Amino acid sequence: MHNNLHDDNVNDSCCKCVAVYYLGETMKNLQSQRTDKMIRDAFIALLKQKDFKNITVTQIAQKAMINRQTFYCYYSDKYDLADQLTEKALGMFEELIEQRWQSIHDRISLVDFLKISQKDQQPLFGQIISEERDLFLTMLNLQVNNQSLCKKCSKV
Image (tube, rainbow, N blue to C red; front, top):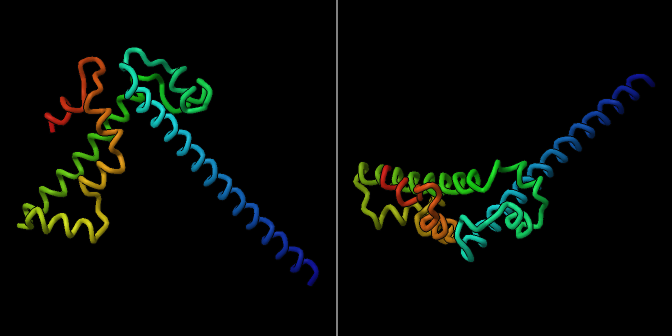
């Protein structure tokens, strides 16, 4: 009987260890997401102040309150960061276009589409623009190697 109790305690203990492990992994993931957001926000804030070519990784890291090495854990350089942000913005536009196209196919008016989207909590152009306003405005004006979000959108 004593062995069964001991075995049960071991199993409970192991379950607690697993739970603590997953909680730790979740916390690391949240920290990683927060750091990535800080980097992106710092980059966008710097782009409002100066041209892309005049921004350095050191400035981005300082603005994000991280060290340069942490920046490189997320992005290979400022061009990689700019490209990923542009792709994110483009992806949001493509999703909106796809949703609207489907609503046209289903013969839903734009007004009804907006009402349905609001009720169903689907991403709307207005919601996305308000939540990611700085990202969109900055990426629309960003020119990197003769590429911009405007040029990429024209290909969609």
